[in-house]
Length: 215
Length: 283
Picture 1 (cartoon, each protein chain N blue to C red):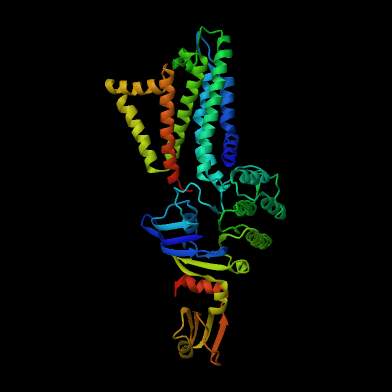
Picture 2 (tube, rainbow over the protein chains, first blue to last red; picture 1 turned 90 degrees about the horizontal axis):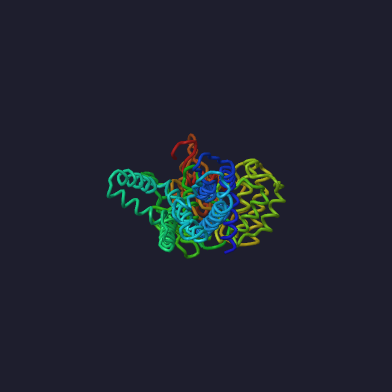
């Protein structure tokens, strides 16, 4: 496990650009009016950017340092867990401490939009953590596939699903239902269970992709 | 131990490795020689599990190696390996952290000996220094198989000599299979135990250097005399100039006679004869 944690340390350390961009956006973003966006929402940027660095920047370099594929992959999953926890903690703190200080009538935080705060702030934070973990693992798997034909095929399938399901009402309901389960879900157990299950399933897909990866 | 059984690798319609069967059982420093495009890098990358082969089996220490192998026990480094842009000393330390079998003391010692500035960031190093850092990381990995793909690229003469010393020391400290691919044949001869020659995707030669020294000869003279002397020998090449002929053999040399000139072949000449080309003309 020592090697895995060394990889976690390196992955997080080489993710500085994501940290800096996220911090700048969170600190500098402004909005005005009666209804404003919470700056805490922008912490999610870190979850969106991190997999790009892990997949396209760190992977080959760690292999050249003698890390095994197994340690790299476990290291990535642990790092996503740590980041999901950290991002969720920061956004929850912003929602608790900074959002009420806005002069605006309403401050929109994604935790409210996704109805997670219906279950109290602590459970909402945990729900957010599981959701962000899912997002990062999903992005990791999708990005890992990109050099291969099946990556492009997956992109095409996603585009086709969104293009076809959105304009047709019954299909739109199916798509909406899916997002209601994984994102806009006030039922904490169902939400966290679905996110965790999908994360595990995607992790196995990611492992298969990693096994095909050439250097 | 490395076992290759009927290994074939194709890129589209091009066959890069052709039905290679090879068994490397003993620890030692092996030199992989071949012309550009002969298949050296493909062979090494396949053994490292960096890419899949089209047909056949590759086993390292009894374990089949493919890209699916999550921990191969093989350390491979290519000459333009990408590394984090960190100070050299930190890079070596991280390598020791991510690889439990890494010999940090050896890496540090080599860094000092090659006068690598530990504080200098990797991207600020010269090509030779970058290659040296990669090579040190690979050798210090202490994995059971170490594959170095053209490690002396960008090295000056002094660095090359020091590199060969480092290779010997590393092997003496931790005997294992080390395969070095290079084009600078004569220099590495003192360091290696066995020679592998690959040409057009096939293994043309795999034996000890002693066998080259005792069996590789050129025999020159009049055509009739040379043909008679070499008729039952393993002739690997031939040059004809006017009425004189030189045949290159890999066999026990014939008896020395007044009409024949028999000379041992240098490693480079032996290699040239084995790969069967000179000056762009097929022989």
